[in-house]
Length: 112
Ligand code: HEC
Image (tube, rainbow, N blue to C red):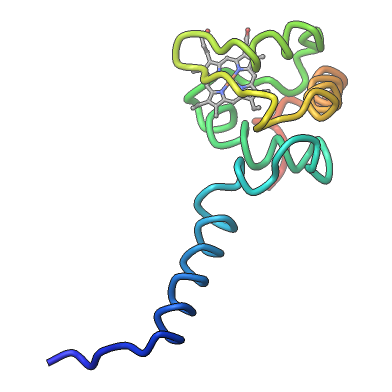
């Protein structure tokens, strides 16, 4: 028979499950509107897993216009999901688009 958990240990379990969810499983929700630390952090958490793995096309080093990147991110296209301002804030998206647009090295050539 399983020992019945006390209220406090059940509370701690729920709390740690909640933290685990925010920290690992849902990085997009963990950082709401304009709370990202840098463009590189947004890219690493929300774009990299598709755009550097062959799911989506390489973005870095192609001098894609920043305004085009913003439109694609807000509206999505085919398999590219859209991101709401609650996920990537207005000024954060501006920073991200500029950062990608001005990058010079193709991401598939960056040494790991
Ligand atoms: C779930 C996978 C996925 C994620 C996450 C994702 N993308 Fe995409 N993206 C795609 C795919 C697939 C395409 C190609 C869509 C098409 O043209 O049919 C694409 C296309 C694009 C394009 C157009 C590229 C071109 O060559 O015209 C841009 C710009 C873009 N994504 C930016 C981003 C940015 C910035 C992020 C992060 C905020 C991001 N994407 C996150 C899958 C993803």
